[in-house]
Image (cartoon, rainbow, N blue to C red; front, side):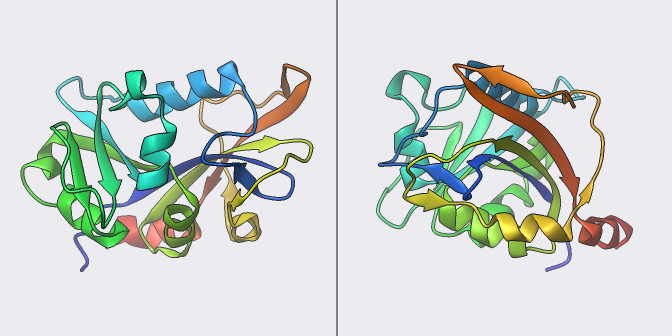
Length: 193
Protein backbone atom coordinates (compact mmCIF):
# COMPACT_ATOMS: atom_id res chain seq x y z
CA UNK A 1 0.00 0.00 0.00
CA UNK A 2 1.79 3.15 -1.19
CA UNK A 3 -0.16 5.65 0.94
CA UNK A 4 1.07 4.26 4.27
CA UNK A 5 2.76 7.05 6.17
CA UNK A 6 6.40 7.03 7.18
CA UNK A 7 7.50 6.91 10.80
CA UNK A 8 10.41 7.51 13.15
CA UNK A 9 11.89 5.13 15.69
CA UNK A 10 13.08 6.33 19.09
CA UNK A 11 15.13 3.98 21.26
CA UNK A 12 17.85 3.84 23.89
CA UNK A 13 20.16 0.82 23.86
CA UNK A 14 23.35 -0.21 25.58
CA UNK A 15 26.41 -1.60 23.82
CA UNK A 16 24.98 -5.11 23.38
CA UNK A 17 21.72 -3.71 21.98
CA UNK A 18 19.86 -4.22 25.25
CA UNK A 19 16.73 -2.11 25.72
CA UNK A 20 14.94 -3.71 28.65
CA UNK A 21 15.09 -6.10 31.55
CA UNK A 22 12.05 -7.72 33.16
CA UNK A 23 9.71 -5.31 31.34
CA UNK A 24 11.51 -2.17 32.54
CA UNK A 25 14.37 0.06 31.45
CA UNK A 26 17.70 -1.17 32.86
CA UNK A 27 18.79 2.43 33.58
CA UNK A 28 17.35 5.68 34.88
CA UNK A 29 18.24 8.66 32.69
CA UNK A 30 15.98 11.66 33.27
CA UNK A 31 17.69 13.60 30.46
CA UNK A 32 16.92 10.85 27.98
CA UNK A 33 13.32 10.63 29.17
CA UNK A 34 12.99 14.41 28.74
CA UNK A 35 14.38 14.13 25.20
CA UNK A 36 11.93 11.27 24.48
CA UNK A 37 8.97 13.33 25.70
CA UNK A 38 10.02 16.42 23.74
CA UNK A 39 10.61 14.63 20.45
CA UNK A 40 7.49 12.47 20.58
CA UNK A 41 5.22 15.33 21.70
CA UNK A 42 6.43 18.37 19.74
CA UNK A 43 4.55 19.27 16.54
CA UNK A 44 4.92 22.14 14.10
CA UNK A 45 1.11 22.35 13.74
CA UNK A 46 -0.55 23.06 17.12
CA UNK A 47 -3.79 21.53 15.80
CA UNK A 48 -2.12 18.12 15.45
CA UNK A 49 -0.62 15.52 17.76
CA UNK A 50 1.98 12.85 17.26
CA UNK A 51 1.21 9.17 17.60
CA UNK A 52 3.29 6.70 19.60
CA UNK A 53 3.08 3.04 18.60
CA UNK A 54 4.10 0.41 21.14
CA UNK A 55 3.70 -3.21 22.04
CA UNK A 56 1.64 -4.42 24.99
CA UNK A 57 4.68 -4.98 27.24
CA UNK A 58 5.91 -1.44 26.56
CA UNK A 59 2.43 -0.11 27.41
CA UNK A 60 2.45 -1.90 30.76
CA UNK A 61 6.08 -0.87 31.43
CA UNK A 62 4.91 2.76 31.47
CA UNK A 63 3.94 3.67 35.04
CA UNK A 64 0.15 3.65 35.33
CA UNK A 65 0.05 7.32 36.34
CA UNK A 66 1.79 8.17 33.03
CA UNK A 67 -0.52 6.04 30.82
CA UNK A 68 -1.54 7.02 28.27
CA UNK A 69 1.46 9.15 27.30
CA UNK A 70 -0.06 12.62 27.44
CA UNK A 71 -0.51 14.91 24.45
CA UNK A 72 0.05 11.99 22.09
CA UNK A 73 -2.21 9.45 20.43
CA UNK A 74 -1.24 6.07 21.89
CA UNK A 75 -1.52 2.97 19.70
CA UNK A 76 -0.92 -0.34 21.46
CA UNK A 77 -0.24 -3.53 19.53
CA UNK A 78 -1.80 -6.50 21.24
CA UNK A 79 -3.81 -9.59 20.50
CA UNK A 80 -4.91 -9.93 24.14
CA UNK A 81 -5.97 -6.39 25.14
CA UNK A 82 -9.48 -5.65 23.96
CA UNK A 83 -9.66 -1.87 23.96
CA UNK A 84 -8.47 1.27 25.68
CA UNK A 85 -10.13 4.66 25.97
CA UNK A 86 -9.24 7.37 23.41
CA UNK A 87 -6.72 8.80 22.73
CA UNK A 88 -5.63 5.15 22.83
CA UNK A 89 -6.21 2.50 20.23
CA UNK A 90 -5.53 -1.24 20.27
CA UNK A 91 -4.58 -2.99 17.04
CA UNK A 92 -3.29 -6.47 16.25
CA UNK A 93 -0.07 -5.62 14.39
CA UNK A 94 2.34 -2.86 13.40
CA UNK A 95 0.83 -3.01 9.91
CA UNK A 96 -2.63 -2.42 11.40
CA UNK A 97 -1.27 0.54 13.37
CA UNK A 98 0.16 2.12 10.23
CA UNK A 99 -3.08 1.57 8.31
CA UNK A 100 -5.06 3.14 11.19
CA UNK A 101 -2.74 6.16 11.30
CA UNK A 102 -2.77 6.51 7.51
CA UNK A 103 -6.58 6.66 7.34
CA UNK A 104 -9.15 9.31 8.27
CA UNK A 105 -9.67 10.75 10.79
CA UNK A 106 -6.20 10.05 12.27
CA UNK A 107 -4.43 10.84 9.00
CA UNK A 108 -5.51 14.47 9.41
CA UNK A 109 -4.96 14.59 13.20
CA UNK A 110 -1.48 13.08 13.43
CA UNK A 111 1.69 14.92 12.44
CA UNK A 112 4.36 12.26 13.10
CA UNK A 113 4.34 8.59 13.99
CA UNK A 114 6.89 7.30 16.51
CA UNK A 115 7.66 3.62 17.11
CA UNK A 116 8.63 3.43 20.79
CA UNK A 117 9.12 -0.30 21.42
CA UNK A 118 9.47 -3.01 22.30
CA UNK A 119 11.64 -5.60 20.71
CA UNK A 120 9.19 -6.90 18.07
CA UNK A 121 7.97 -3.41 17.13
CA UNK A 122 11.57 -2.31 16.62
CA UNK A 123 12.43 -5.41 14.57
CA UNK A 124 9.51 -4.72 12.24
CA UNK A 125 10.26 -0.99 12.03
CA UNK A 126 13.90 -1.44 11.11
CA UNK A 127 12.92 -3.59 8.10
CA UNK A 128 10.12 -1.32 6.88
CA UNK A 129 10.40 0.88 3.78
CA UNK A 130 8.32 3.45 5.72
CA UNK A 131 11.19 4.03 8.19
CA UNK A 132 12.26 7.67 8.06
CA UNK A 133 14.58 8.33 11.00
CA UNK A 134 15.95 6.60 14.06
CA UNK A 135 16.55 8.73 17.15
CA UNK A 136 19.05 6.53 18.95
CA UNK A 137 20.42 7.01 22.45
CA UNK A 138 23.69 5.08 22.53
CA UNK A 139 24.37 4.08 26.12
CA UNK A 140 28.01 3.28 26.78
CA UNK A 141 28.38 0.19 28.92
CA UNK A 142 26.70 -3.15 29.40
CA UNK A 143 23.52 -3.76 31.35
CA UNK A 144 21.68 -6.97 32.08
CA UNK A 145 18.92 -7.13 29.46
CA UNK A 146 16.38 -9.60 28.15
CA UNK A 147 15.00 -7.44 25.32
CA UNK A 148 17.12 -6.16 22.45
CA UNK A 149 17.18 -3.68 19.58
CA UNK A 150 18.66 -4.81 16.24
CA UNK A 151 21.66 -2.43 16.40
CA UNK A 152 23.33 -4.04 13.37
CA UNK A 153 20.53 -2.53 11.24
CA UNK A 154 21.78 0.97 12.12
CA UNK A 155 24.77 0.43 9.81
CA UNK A 156 22.44 0.85 6.81
CA UNK A 157 21.45 4.36 7.94
CA UNK A 158 23.12 7.73 7.46
CA UNK A 159 23.94 10.14 10.30
CA UNK A 160 22.05 13.43 10.04
CA UNK A 161 21.60 16.47 12.26
CA UNK A 162 18.46 17.57 14.06
CA UNK A 163 18.71 20.95 15.82
CA UNK A 164 16.59 19.61 18.70
CA UNK A 165 19.13 16.89 19.49
CA UNK A 166 22.43 17.58 21.27
CA UNK A 167 25.54 16.15 19.63
CA UNK A 168 27.65 16.27 22.79
CA UNK A 169 28.31 13.34 25.10
CA UNK A 170 25.98 13.15 28.09
CA UNK A 171 26.49 11.71 31.56
CA UNK A 172 23.95 11.04 34.27
CA UNK A 173 24.05 8.75 37.31
CA UNK A 174 27.54 7.64 36.24
CA UNK A 175 26.17 6.47 32.87
CA UNK A 176 27.63 7.97 29.70
CA UNK A 177 25.46 8.21 26.61
CA UNK A 178 25.09 10.05 23.33
CA UNK A 179 22.16 10.95 21.08
CA UNK A 180 22.36 10.02 17.40
CA UNK A 181 19.96 10.79 14.56
CA UNK A 182 20.04 8.41 11.62
CA UNK A 183 18.18 8.71 8.32
CA UNK A 184 16.99 5.79 6.22
CA UNK A 185 18.18 6.04 2.61
CA UNK A 186 14.82 4.39 1.75
CA UNK A 187 13.09 7.46 3.17
CA UNK A 188 14.02 9.53 0.12
CA UNK A 189 12.25 6.99 -2.11
CA UNK A 190 9.15 7.07 0.11
CA UNK A 191 9.13 10.89 0.05
CA UNK A 192 9.43 10.96 -3.74
CA UNK A 193 6.60 8.47 -4.29
